Length: 133
Image 1 (cartoon, rainbow, N blue to C red):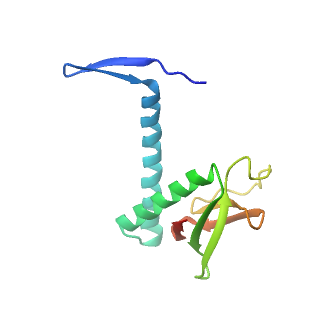
Image 2: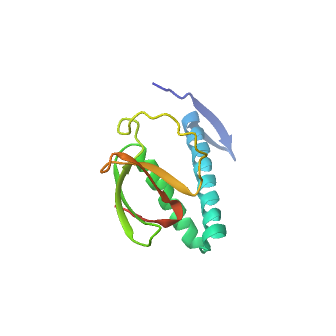
Image 3: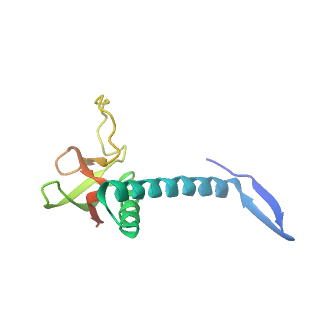
């Protein structure tokens, strides 16, 4: 179990006590924000999204990835042929089978996931994510 030692600091005459866990959370938040803005910029450049549209889809992708890391999630995306697909996917290590690397180069425009219905790996274009159920 991790324990964090409290740190005391004085700012403008007020004394504050924080834990190093708070610092780690802020660093994780900064990393997550960087990922969101990077993904949004990708949507603006490659897909012609507006800033607000791009940020909305980027947030949706980050939330989905975070939820899939712990459980099976129902979500919707637009397939390449234009139809809407309902998918049940996960990235949780206790759900997905052990696999070897495929030797393929990672593609930053798609998100791979383990399809719980088809019991196989699938992917979707990150820009085409519609909603998380």
